[in-house]
Image (tube, helix red, strand yellow):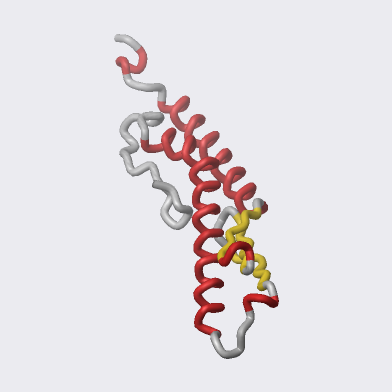
Amino acid sequence: MIPGGGQPNMQELLQQAQKMQQNLARAQEELAQTEVEGQSGGGLVRATVTGAGELRGLHIDPKAVDPEDTETLADLIVAAVQAANENAQQVQQDKLGPLAQGLGGGGFPGLGGGGGFPGLGGR
């Protein structure tokens, strides 16, 4: 009888899974430390978020402030935060994409697909 019968070595699979889990945790920690910016109104409003999507800062140029038109200012803020979050999602994809493919893209036979990381912007 052939040891393992052609099946993957379970100990090896467990070691690979543990290594991927460590890599994922390290990548998530790096994302939490990475800051990206989004802007609107030609830079009048700038939002800074972490790679994990946490809003860290908001800069509003005084030229954007018109007491008679707070709706435009609100729109500029929303647009800047959305732009920053889109940039954060791209950073997440760049950092976590290879890890997601390892989990769902055939790196571990029998563990199923999916590949994304809900809540982290993975696809």
